Length: 307
Ligand code: NAD
Image (cartoon, rainbow, N blue to C red; front, top):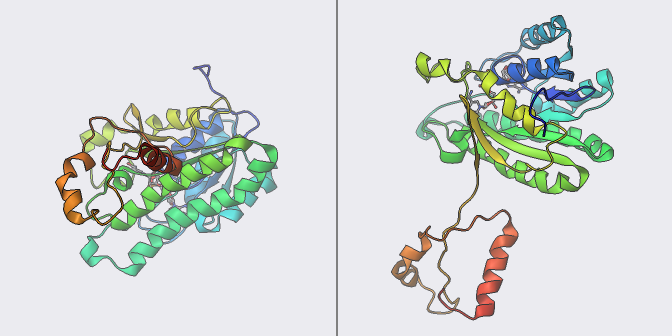
């Protein structure tokens, strides 16, 4: 891919939660690079309370003043079909969906209420699903689409006080992996990022000196590369990004233990060889459920009871 001045002329890009933080940074960037942008934002607080048209309007004005094209949408991502409809009605197509909208309901698991769980899963999981589901028929028909879903280190590794958010964020990974597999033959490319950036979400939990090095604008270039039409290689990738750092993550499996599935297969037999279960000296990097089946078949063919 040519490195300089990636452009998106004629493309329609939907950015959810684009009224502030990372979403605003994506929207203004793509607006300045030739794309027609749907700036979606419900205008709620970071805890998901209230709503306002102002957040999206301000970003649309900024894009237009800079000579770009943009339209606002104020629906919650839970009504994703309305957001995609805004793209179709105003610009006639949709090429890229950036599922970015998000909220927090941080509380220790001991004190977590059903509402804290439900709201987070609704906005993050159902929201990403509804937007992608509404865009999917257009992507398939035109044999072109690019999707970014937004995970978080909290989802990948867990984070104190964020059981709801962690669960919803790791869900983005499984969701993306499946979209990547189902979309590949239609040139629909889906990737998931775990960003870190200064925003209203992080400003209360990180020191100012750190926040100064985590501008949302520094997450944008990676997303720009991933959703560009020339990206046909990275599909179903998990990338962490922030403060100038970009890295790809993948699953790693230990070489593992295979016991004969008969009466000798007891908890004690597992414990005796536990070191093999946790031995990462010869790791594998599985990328699909079939890898596990193949592993079992191969071991069975070898007739080994203990590899
Ligand atoms: P932010 O609060 O600045 O932006 C999120 C935006 O989403 C807000 O403008 C909000 O109004 C909007 N929004 C909330 N609920 C919505 C809904 N139901 N429908 C439409 N819009 C809605 O936060 P941010 O830091 O820019 O976060 C962007 C995304 O990145 C989120 O998904 C967040 O979970 C994720 N993330 C951020 C960080 C970080 O370090 N900032 C880290 C990991 C993940």
